[in-house]
Structures are given as C-alpha cells and as structure tokens.
Image 1 (cartoon, rainbow, N blue to C red):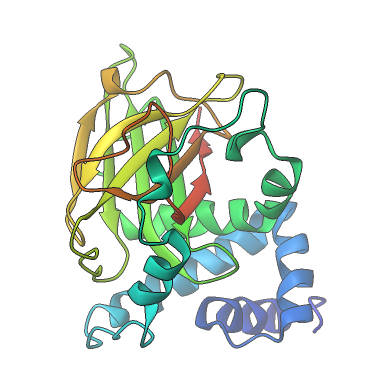
Image 2 (image 1 turned 180 degrees about the vertical axis):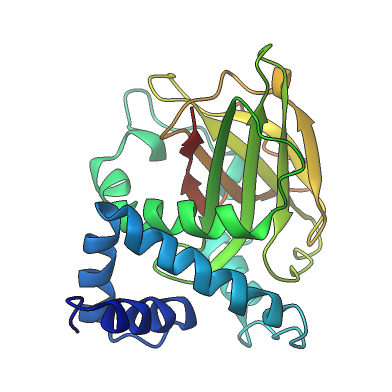
Length: 242
C-alpha cells in the first residue's frame, strides 16, 4: 500500500472505510492516520459517502451460539457475585488489558464518531468513543459527549447496529472510568439496541482517554460497585474539540 499521491491516499482511505485492507495494510494505514490530519479528512469524506448506505442494509444475525458461549463462560452458579480476593488487580488495572486498547482504535473512534452524529451546534468540548467487541469483534455502540461553554452537557449512547437481547436473567450495564480514578462507575442498565441520553452530572468528570464499557451482568445489574460479568463492548474517549 502506497500513500504517495492523492489518488493512492484516496483509494487507501476508501478501502479502509470499507474494511477491505489486508491486516498488515490496515495497521500501516492506521499508523499513518494517527499523525496525518489530511488523511483523516480523506477517511471522513469516504465515511460521509459510504456510511449512509449501511442504514439500508438488513440487520446481520449474530454468530450462532454467541449467547450460549457467554453463558458457558459465566457458569451455572452466577460467579458474578463472587468477591475478588483482596489485592487482586481489577480488569482496569491489568497492563495487558490496557495494551489491548490500541491507538488504532482511538483513531477509528475519532473518525467514526465524527460522521455518525449530526452537529446542530458547535460544543465547547466534544468527546467520542466507539465501543468495540474485544478481540476485534466489531463496533457495537457510539458514545458522544458534548459540553457547552458553561460546563453543561449530555452523553448520548447509541447502537451502531441492531443489538441482541441479553439472555434471560442477565442485563447489559454501562460503565465509565475517568483517568486516575480508583475504579469504574455505573451509568445504568441498557436496553439492547436502544439509545441512552444522560446529563453530564451523571459522569465522574469527562476527559480524553476516559474508558467506557458495556458488560453482561446479573439481572438488575452488578451486585457490587464494579463490573463482574464479561466485557461485551469497550472503548476510550477521544477529544474532538477544544
């Protein structure tokens, strides 16, 4: 893959948006993307042209056995309520976990978030995060936070694609963790495929690199003050405006 001429850059950006680049080409493109504002604009242009077409596509059924596989991992005895041993690191403290959230995902968050939502007014600050399934399972939800000049604002969470109903006896729970915070904070339960709007006051502040995730919890939510079930979607916020 070459990015030497305008035609090559445009073609590569189009393939990136379509998802047709080979894995090594995609990694190289995302590396270039992180430091090239003009290339990000090229990608945004392709997204503006191509993403609206996705709204006309029929919903894609989830892979067979998805929820049974999650249930099998959870086990029959609701291990979500089992306390974590004292001193054991939580998911938000494990180095390998943070390493898995790459800068490439952040670049994708900037580009996708900038085109999926309308902009009725220009906020003083704006943050977006694309929540992706772990291990490259695809984008699931978009977080969009807008803050006005007076520090007031709203968080909107909306599905990128139609969502699945969680298994009986389980709930989807939305979490955030601000940089430097000792642990995550629950932002409430979710209805699969439904949009959520929260006032900024519900968040423990809002900064770049803030973590958002959706986990599968026992019905009614986690019995503890932290996530206990498997992570379904996760991402970090990127500031778009200053």
